[in-house]
Image 1 (cartoon, rainbow, N blue to C red):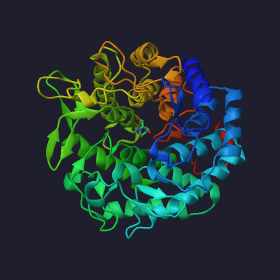
Image 2 (cartoon, protein in one colour):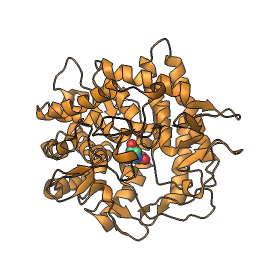
Image 3 (cartoon, helix red, strand yellow):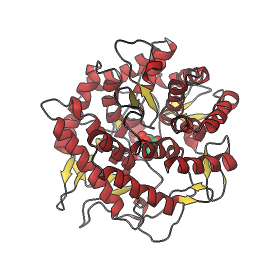
Length: 456
Ligand code: DMJ
């Protein structure tokens, strides 16, 4: 089924928005997001590995030809360093490792080089935004007194390690190792990492902590850096398990109805709200269970299972059976959105991602059932003639479509669904680590240097 869904999403993108970043499935035209400046083709690059994995050979071939002829980084564009890294660098790296086609390696390294000026700050903590022609960077104007964002500068590590591996140039890995050095020099409030860090002064901005937006994939990349290094990166390992310990103590709570959730922390006060983005953490806890210190393996799996259950409830308590952008545990509600501007669903993957990890790590059939419920809801409410669209209010009985087919729907949501219903030996976890946009990168095994080929 996810293959049919991919075909519908891809065919419509191709028909109405080919070469542009994303598709507007209701108005049947291209959608350009300012995250990628005027770099084009986000959906194509994000979808390459999904097409490959699903064995959609013709489509993969046309996507590859587009990349060869049209993907151009010599443009005057101000881009989000994080978004371009996870979607474009990550997408190109995966396409290279899966297919062995040189063009993807070349383009990934070329783009990596374009991103390097972002690190020209007094601390080496990169800017959020970069003009890839002039090399001038800056931060989001809304981010706490000129700060860089934890989830942005903390989500470069996996891709940059691979860029050094593939180019033979150590500069990429050096840049991301330095980020850790800066973080390790700083005092952390209660052992927690604030979402904001000023790249000039090297000091934290506002003391807001989140495992959802602005924080999320920083934690994910600590764990995955350790796993991707074939468990040799002890620093990444320690930072991950220390962080999880602090998160458990200060952020994880249980509602009176018995649902475990991860709250947000604002200068010591808890906001009892969990974002859809935070739901990825169920899969992360389960993936990290194996290495957990002090006999905590079973506990981390259990934590993953509890988060999966809570996130499933957030879907089940809506009329459309699709989860809201954020849900709360206060004012008499549990796992329900209370504010109008938190009721939307934009085809996000995190809940399905957690089902996939939980399925692979426990084989409890309920995760496939829950995944199937999500497929039915997507088909019923998000599928339209021109592709798939997000929904403005999942508690309403009538769809109001937002008219965007996000590129991560093809790279993540559909790929995780496909993996959820595949055998475990398709991209096995011992050999492949998924970046935060679901692009698989090979584990760099200690003993086999350059033989990624063997890992297919
Ligand atoms: C994706 O781009 C990535 O999963 C990122 O880590 C968070 N936001 C979207 C999906 O929701």
